[in-house]
Length: 140
Image (cartoon, rainbow, N blue to C red; front, side, top):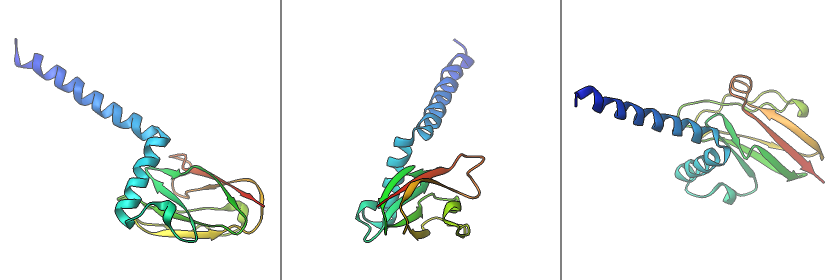
């Protein structure tokens, strides 16, 4: 058996690992679970325990959760838990300007004061190329 016959299985194995990583990045539930782990690592508590706000994490070009329903008067805090990428929040239907770029561990908050149908928000630099888009429904 030649040395090359041992290299082929190793190459296939590394390709399989790379493909499984890409597949995991495409699974919103897996990405959001990893985002929550990162939030806990950074802030020492689950995002559900943040006082007075509903947290949406920004991680691997996804908003977690992607679809959100909140009652009128809720403040949503978008938190970047990525390690190297900056994001922003654009709430076009609310008529406010795009947030500043949020670097890792930074956040942006907005309080929803009017009920209505689902509205789309997006990440300014990544909505088109990475489809980083979320939705929020504000209930009475």
